[in-house]
Amino acid sequence: MIPACRGQASHPRSMSLWEHGLHLFRSAVGVVLPAPMLRRAMVLKTDGCPRLVVRDRAFPVRRNLYLVGFGKAVLGMAAAAEEILGDHLIQGVVSVPHGIRACLQQAGMEEMLLKPHSRIQVIEGAKHNLPDREALRAASMIRELAEGLTADDLLLVLVSGGGSALLPAPTPPILLEEKEKVTKLLASRGATIQELNTIRKALSLLKGGGLARAAYPAQVLSLILSDVIGNPVDIIASGPTVYSSTSAQGCLQILTKYNLLSILPRSVETVLSSSISDPSGPKDYSHVYNVVIGSNSLALEEAKHQAEDLGYWTLILSAAVCGEVSRVARLYSQLIQFVCLSTAGLGEGPLRDQVRGDLLKLAAELEIPGLNLVDPLKALQGLESERWVCLLAGGETTVQLQGNGKGGRNQELALQVALELHRAKATGAGYFLGRCEVLFLSGGTDGQDGPTEAAGAFSSQDLVDKAAQEGLDVETFLSNNDSYTFFSKFRNGHHLLLTGLTGTNVMDIQAILIRARDR
Ligand SMILES: Nc1ncnc2c1ncn2[C@@H]1O[C@H](COP(=O)(O)OP(=O)(O)OP(=O)(O)O)[C@@H](O)[C@H]1O
Ligand SMILES: O=C(O)[C@H](O)CO
Image (tube, rainbow, N blue to C red; front, top):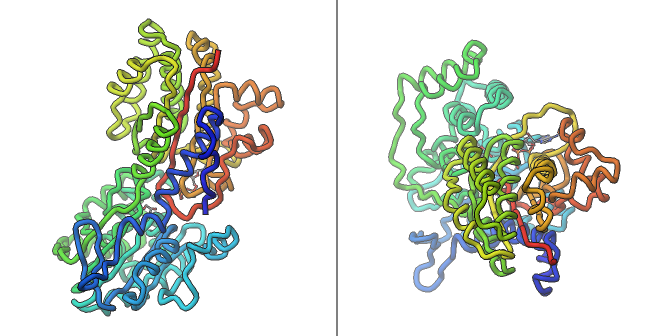
């Protein structure tokens, strides 16, 4: 469990920027932890006829509840759901990552484990995030449970990121190995999650609405924790309870784009061509209610709330930040320079116009969905000087791996931002950067950044110089994608964001905190 936020009792002014940043990150993650999220999402009302209330819908319950789930955060979600549902829950099966129970136990996160004698069966599988025999077994038990339901039953489906690998049910005659080969090839050739899951849906019995069809005529209530930008319910975990409009032609286009047509297993060709001759599956999904109960935006909203309480003028830039880390770092660095120019009271001037112009150009190039910097920059420009500023953003960046170092996209981003700011110090903006305290923080909400034990890292405009004093050359570490090694060495790991596994995942979060230095 993420420890309670430190420093809440202290006065914000006496807290360091790092304490503020940590508090914001922890609060953001806290709001999308399984138990609070489930408790907000559904309520069991027992006055009159017992019913499960989710948003504007009420589902009558009378010991007719079944539960299935798949995904990295689903064990904690199931534990919370079981507590809420009590005796109304008859039976359940969840497919969760290999080793997760031992991990949660070790981390002292017992509240995310099911009680002894639970009615929910747990299957651990998908070692290294790849579908395997255990995940296949779990998927077939989930399918069997769904197919056995009647019109009197309610199937609660818990979905989170990682669900695709944990619910493999290849359409015969495709074998698990064949499907895995196709998805692995697509991933290694740079396919997006939308492209990858479009193919997964076309080759699966349960994805792309298959689970909802299997459960018919039972009611299906799907509670979804989103790990995909924009929260597309048909893509998250490949949408097992969402109608899929994917055509076989669409799949062929993707396979052609990644040069895979000529090496497709025969079974995959067979399944795709049979869906070309029978493109329209049943479209009636009126028995299904899909609800996104946790997302990056929700986490950012909570962080905003907390930042405002601490006294910051706060803005959420976007919950859809994507693109190559080095370009995103440039965007953040220029934003920081712009804020420093503003809080230092430099109203107008060619320097600010230049930073503004560069920023707008870069933002347009990055094509971050929904990011419009024109209004935020205007608001920042109008801020009274010396005002504390907090900019928040979230999403998922990408790193083109070139070296063989150890790191993750968040640590690499924090280090790149430090380097960009260091370079900016040599320009006209240097003076204004020097007049501000700056903290840049980037972290994965699951508590694990790439294959490292850190969730992310934080940096500032002085990091490169300070590292040089310790004999650490930032550019050398970056060129080897070795951000984790860097942050572990630099100030004895003081700049690493270490939360441990959190039990949730709504992608990554960035916070920029800026305040004028006391003069
Ligand atoms: N040395 C490295 N430096 C920077 N990034 C790295 C490095 N090694 C791996 N990564 C990045 O880490 C990610 C893979 O880690 P992880 O398994 O946590 O990803 P994921 O499953 O997409 O993450 P999540 O579960 O948070 O969605 C990829 O984005 C990859 O580019
Ligand atoms: O499981 C998956 O497909 C990914 O995590 C996206 O949700």
